[in-house]
Image (cartoon, helix red, strand yellow):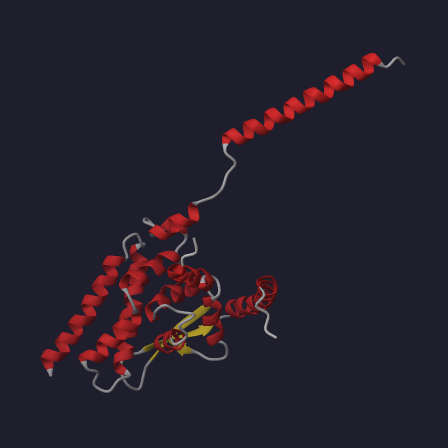
Length: 131
Length: 116
């Protein structure tokens, strides 16, 4: 029985190592906390089964999910300043619409021209109409 | 162009800001240990992508002071970390319930998903 227990432990350690690798950019204290939480989850989930097989261990790890997905979620739960490397999908959120400098110039010029026309019309009217 | 394959992004966006209150609601009046909590949430595929993604959320709820934890010996296996709701967590959940009803009604009204 010993060799198979060793195989199961190795599966768990490989999984946790993959999570640790995926946690790039996360503060070290947060990464350790996450690994502790996952390690505890696996230990408790194993203890709920009667003599878990290697397949049972794989099921526990499969249900925990992809290391990259867990790491991405950990980054998403951090204040932005503490995350060194943000996942690529957040780039989609950075697209904001701003008025281009050209359109601002056009609008200002048009308003100035309109004001000039109005002043001219008023001037002509005042000049031509005798009081 | 509408890309239905990227629906995962919509699911993520909808979960953001709501899932944590599902956690709080599960802890209302009942302490649960980690595996119990994430298994329960993991069973709802609309709420969770995988059980492991819930642990970063639980960590944030601990730091926010909305949940507290304590270790308890288990009759079989290692000690289990139990989660419970704090008074801050209860207040946050009550506030969410009010906001959620108004939010849901407004979206249903505009999008046309009101239940008849």
